[in-house]
Image 1 (tube, rainbow over the protein chains, first blue to last red):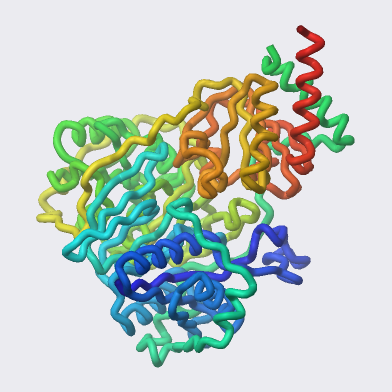
Image 2 (cartoon, rainbow over the protein chains, first blue to last red):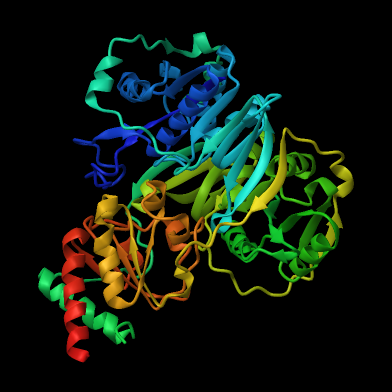
Length: 263
Length: 328
């Protein structure tokens, strides 16, 4: 099974507080720490487990610049045999449809049986996988939380639907699936693993290699654009207890009792 | 001229989803004077009853009846919608598992813009529409502008739009089934497997000690269990704890987990993503403890404490035990 997993580098929410910059127009990026979009690890792990059972190859691809190569190497340290960086000045400012267009070029350059994405990017909206499938006229399923490979080029999959129920379907290959978190336990990657893949070649493909019309991607083709950011204010906000821990514990105990919790 | 506005409405066994009214509210934000059309797909008597119940709120209901659509397979419904929607249409759907499955690919086939998980809709200036969505689990919001000159598909966050008080619409049902023809797909629905109920039923408890990523590791769970024990409560959790296999799926609160209605909800190290909050009903008294002062949970909680749960919860447990022993 030849599997392509589409991954993305995002701001690491465990290392950064997501705040507005001084101008109040964007996210503060000074000293920002980036990492792989966490849901993508589940997609890569699932691909690795399928290939371990059935043979084949896992390729990871991302759209971005030089800095994005680090996440490809991280996923290669997990076990992906190949990384591909999709990079071109013409790609800059692409919206989700633009990203899907670039990935379509990558899919068509190879011969993949299965294409996986993470369920959603931290800074995205669960959109690129479904777009890519429609562009390729491949079947698509989102929120996939189990995959069983059947004979005759089919998969039996389940999707996570409301209340944790599972919708079971059969889907023909080649297809695109977005992988829900929790489907597996992504393997740990240490510094040693990353060093071991540091010298492997990671080819870069631009618009020419991917046979993409530069006018179909990038900022000018984008129908959807972020204008600016702001800090959300939902609801009225909590009454924040600013006292000592002891005082806060006391108050919370009183409140629980007052709400009928300590009978 | 405003492009024609549609809402795709889901139903179950003929009962229309609550999102039908929220989609109407979202449509009124795009154009207060719009006479929107609901599109409903399905088969048999259930479809007819869903269509007739929408007549009270939508001006027109497009019914697409097809045996292949008896179960809502997004791959087939996408093909049906591409056949019936006029060029330039504005289409809204709920951002839940079905909308996530259908909408991105549909936007490609319609050559329309797509914005997922919309929280509010601003002014339309000509063919430009402004909407608000969130990133990083609700920590920050973005103003997004989209070009709707060849139409747009929007998925709308459940609960974000308050259903409006609407005058009766006296809508009429228009049968569009004939325009659809035969539907086939490389994805075939087999069955639905209902979630297991698990050892503890968190939906029955009046107090929940709910843990999130802030619990850090499985070995720390006894800290929450001790507090729950002292309070006579149950331990529930948010998604990351289940993903890490620290607790059973049956303990998860949220749109893909259980819907709970406790009186008191202790959100411990939970950031407060909307999928999690969607599982909290009946306006519980929410006490949130989180190290991150910017955690979205503080926007919806009643009481907020910025602290490390690994240190705070054990002290709370001793205090509760102390009070209990005095009372006894």
